[in-house]
Length: 521
Image 1: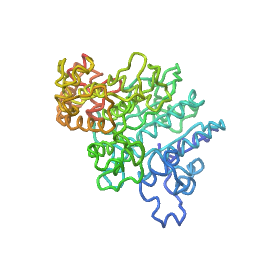
Image 2: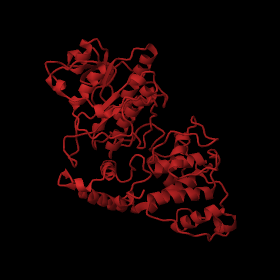
Image 3: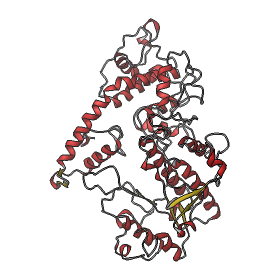
């Protein structure tokens, strides 16, 4: 559809009295003040990332380049009339978070003024990644950046008065990374709207022109040429019954500043991964574990410089660590507990851990701010370790600790097992001290041991990968589907795991299944 004599879709919209705004699409040039251009400012991804955190209020300080200082343009004349001059061009040097900060600033004003454009076009390019280029994030971090930016946009629109009239179409600008079991040119597309079918995968073969045709019909636009005139709208993706439930953004599990090898450290603390060391752990027995886990974003400090290793850890804090360890996304809180409210910082982590069976409450309460006892920690650790490994908890109803009589009956089996495995150690004089509160350092040490003990994970995942490859082969004859051996649920999971890796559960599943056990779960 590009560069045809009949014009672009935004030309079509403008010609028929629709309002349009373009964020980044076809933007190719920029102007920047000479003093900034000659300085060493804003030459790295890390500097732009810091700008986005200042814009979001996550970090204090003045912007190195105030919004509006750099202005962006296009070599397509019709684009310049509708282009956001503050929204960056295609470059992976600038995080998609910064781009979304610019859009959400404008969107907030649109809501206030009641003048959201009829058609908004946006480019969020960082899923292209910068490969392994030093001083830029890893590919997985850049994809996480891209996903989070899109999630923030959907969150904002779906919580606004415009949601009831909105449809968001998302598509890759070009399919990359090789062939799949069907073709090397296909990609995924997403439709987000109150009128889009929810929890639904549409297997209809659509083209990008079909998507353009769908947008035209929603806006009441005529076709531009023979191509979109003959295209088929995406009928099967929609329903005539609106579901106005808004979407809540899920925060990234992968630190956005996870940098490629050879990179300098990102120069500020982001509440996720932590480069460098905390000032209060020098000489501490748990220093190595704390630094290793903080670098992975599994544990966090009390602030940028302090971990407070000997402070007691709460049940909510430990639950949050566990879901980060397992890469389980946070969940919208469903008000199961009287002592947890949706506004609490830990509410979504508690919900995710509870649904995953990692933590249990006391009936109607969770006691999120209570210190976690050593026996409570042991029970949680056992559940987590079983999810990360092939270990099955043995039926042992007595421990070898001198204070076994003080251990709650419900915790004895877990404590006996984790002591046998070597995940939690006793105190001096062969005591376990089950009712004593665990410290932040003890939590870090236990998580570090879990990761080391689960060192067979890579081998397990390779075995799982092989099993799914065999299962997929049975469903195909060459590159064609074998109609006699079709199982859509299995096929969807085979594709999901091959893309996401064999440690990420399929949406709605509680774990990564092997093909032979899926049918029974």
